[in-house]
Length: 92
Image (cartoon, rainbow, N blue to C red; front, side, top):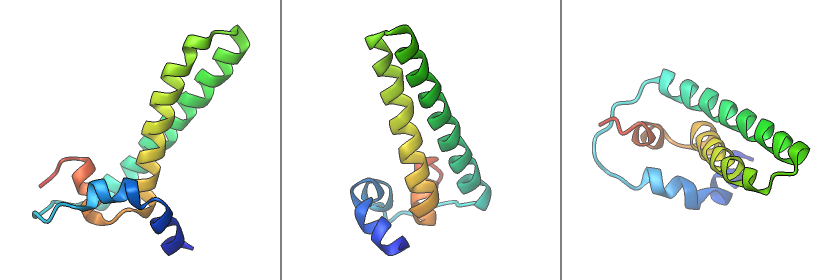
């Protein structure tokens, strides 16, 4: 299942896994990335609810920003290699 999801999300993962330099990885970086992704998805959900409740079409901007940020964090945090996690933190 993980191999299928990695293949499905390869366009996102390739951006962060393409570098061949040394990297500094800590397991806490992955945990923080997953928590950050969850928080961004929660903010996107609250923004979506607020935008629908207030009938405000301009609310789509923060919804998209937080949803895409959360989605990328979750993809890299759950499916990415140690190199991808270190690269998203810009740690070498």
